[in-house]
Image 1: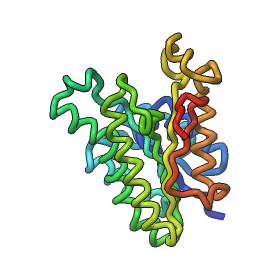
Image 2: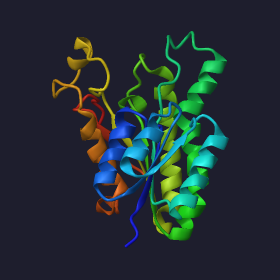
Image 3: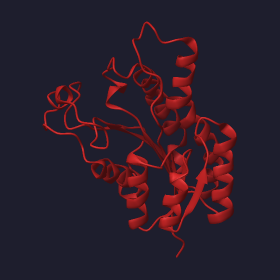
Length: 233
């Protein structure tokens, strides 16, 4: 039986790397892309496909998808992860920084999705999982470009998932709060009802669920994995 194939974008460390490990444990063939080379090393460890490139560069994304098709002949799941874009006072962010934030948080997903949609349409099935942020619906001044463009990502996800639902292609967003791969700050812990940061594996478990057929009737959603951090209903 052919194993399902999951491609992780920006999977060299943190959530992306742990998701790749968990999906490998769950029986997926894995591709890992990162700009640092760590993704390539992780993929080798997992017996998968490693690719060094940036999700900010369209040609790198295209090369990754092409390499995956050459290696596996199918793409069943895409995990869109990314690094941190520009931060600062919302009044002081320059035009160039806003444009860079759009590349980091929105266009990276749109570009990858355009590449894999024809493949998934031919297969009659696919799941795209985007790592977003709790700040998409309750903007946080510490993460201004992330909050703005991931709110846009929520809109894109709804439009895309509605269009392709009948074709068997799903898209969902995972909205993390604060994660233990980052330095812990007392003022942030105080905001979280559970009283702690999330373990990275708690995010990976959610990603793996949305990647799997266990979530086959879930699409177009923004699933908060934030320990109750956000207050909106």
